Length: 331
Image 1: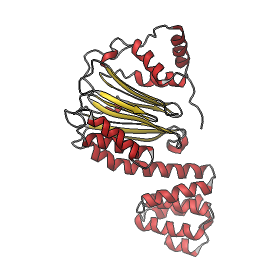
Image 2 (image 1 turned 60 degrees about the vertical axis):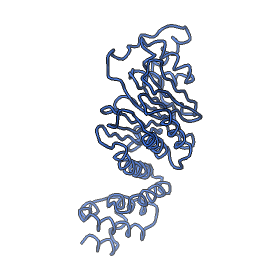
Image 3 (image 1 turned 180 degrees about the vertical axis):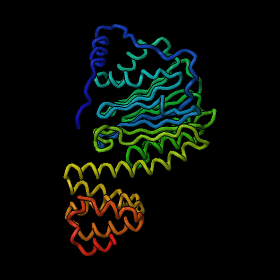
Image 4 (image 1 turned 30 degrees about the vertical axis):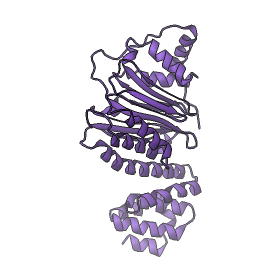
């Protein structure tokens, strides 16, 4: 995987740190609504992923708290949030600072650091959590290798304890573990004011659509009575889509055996999705599995007869044109 390019701002920021100078970064607007929130930032070293999950009694919390950059790290900035702490924190990590060093820079270049809260993790698993003395109780956090969990205006410390335990004990990919932590925090009382929104992001180098960006998973519930329940529904779709994207991206790169592995996994996750089955047929054919391709295409067309028109013109199915079974499917 490639390392994200360090911006000119990052280099200048790093130089200023060394020189002990204050950086001209604008603080969050005074008097903004307090971000009563619980969040977790985490890294999966084996998968090369970093991510953030957050929930709050606050509209569209996903537009404020979560920040992540593949091969660099993830940041959650909350309470009376200074949203510049997200991208600037990532710039500092990319410039080579440890999480504690990056936090020190952010604090000393902010006019009200005691009302901020932050969680930060690097792509190699180093972490820090910070709760300013002015955050509304209960407020605090817990951290360890590969994660940091934190919250403010919570029902109590059991919220972050439950998040930590769930993250460490849950088996699965990073998105599943982040969601499990959030759900555990919610079950332990969560935001003491109630529920409204939630968000979950996972970044992986070339993890986005067709590999052109790094955002593998990006789901938000901006306003709902039960945002975690809705997030759980969306996460199933998002994980399927991520697996599908991996398969199709590898197919476009002509890495057919690897593509087939991911697309078979995708079809197992969504066995009744006609479009998933259609792409499975295409990839099976490219991998030399002709009979299996016909089977997948038959199931795809059965689920969505409109796919017949696409199959007739699809150059990726050219190898099936003379096959009687293929011709029978398109009648």
